[in-house]
Length: 455
Ligand SMILES: Nc1ncnc2c1ncn2[C@@H]1O[C@H](COP(=O)(O)OP(=O)(O)OP(=O)(O)O)[C@@H](O)[C@H]1O
Ligand SMILES: [Mg+2]
Image (tube, rainbow, N blue to C red):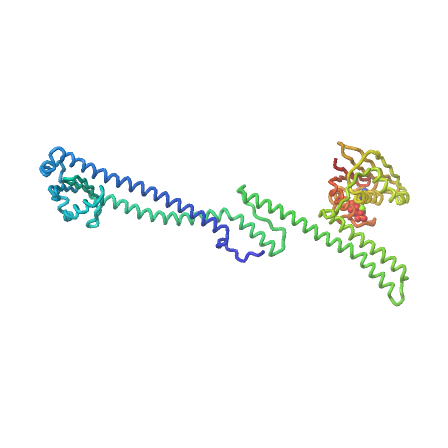
């Protein structure tokens, strides 16, 4: 899938979703905290104002208790210079009105509002706010009030600051979120760019730049890089295999072509029977190569069905030796087999015979004249093992790690016929049986192949 745009932020990207969630949570948290602070502060300040009005009210009520309501205008202890607004109403007639009220509003409007209001009420006049409290009895009513413009102005300022702060917090939150996200999601960008580069160029050697932060993205990048290493090896192996197969097919096919041309020319240099026999032999080689490749693939992909049975190891060895008896004799090789009758393994007889045949074939093919082959099958740690040793040309240290790879052949063995597929098939068959194969070899001295079967 190709990425159309290379923009870091677009609406369907995870980054914008994270940013939106982050902003919503961050901003709503900030609004909640500011609102909480505003309500606590406003409640405290307004409560303070109410308390001061109530205290004044209590003072007047004490005076009334002491001197009687009708004498209050003479004995009121309220001081005119104080900021309070005081009205005492007796039988719907204001019997005491302090100077502050006289300059304020018609007394009748205050009295009317007091009659219908419960306890505290506010009046706005000249752009200011006043807080009043009314104490009503059957006979009289006391009204006390105060200019609370200072407090309201303070709260107004606070509200303005509050909205400013919310705006600032929003901008800060979004900018901070963008910067943080960019930093956090940078490795993802690097992963995307690397994948995009590999898709566009087909070059598998590109790797994600891994930073120093040992976080989850670091782990992800390292694991993807390892996966790319593996894919690169597999793709290169596949390319090499295709090259090698093409190379190995070319030789017999060219021979078939030349032989056929020679046989079909006007003055044939080969008689048809010889030509056909040669073509048959070459096509046999091609078939063997293709069958071996297909066998290895089937075993490796697990699509090959194994017919697992209890097998007597000695019987398996004898069966294979019967096949090679003639060749062993012809090559003047001495063979020693040392295997007890009571060693059994579980496996597919035909497939294991195929594997063992390849190992014995190599032991004969790469042996020296008058060489020796020894086959042993001891029990080691309760596991059946099979050793095939030869006194042949041996394998150099340089070649040893590669001999189980498809189509690999050591230079020294190129004089002998072969495709370089025998050991890869052996390994694949043994892997399907959960068995292991090991090799030890010394150049010009010989080799030992050891198979370890599972319990
Ligand atoms: N017993 C051995 N002694 C020396 N070299 C060996 C021995 N067995 C394997 N080799 C080396 O390992 C290479 C790979 O062996 P493998 O059996 O896969 O291929 P091959 O024998 O060349 O061809 P094929 O088995 O497909 O006909 C051989 O070419 C040879 O160089
Ligand atoms: Mg071989």
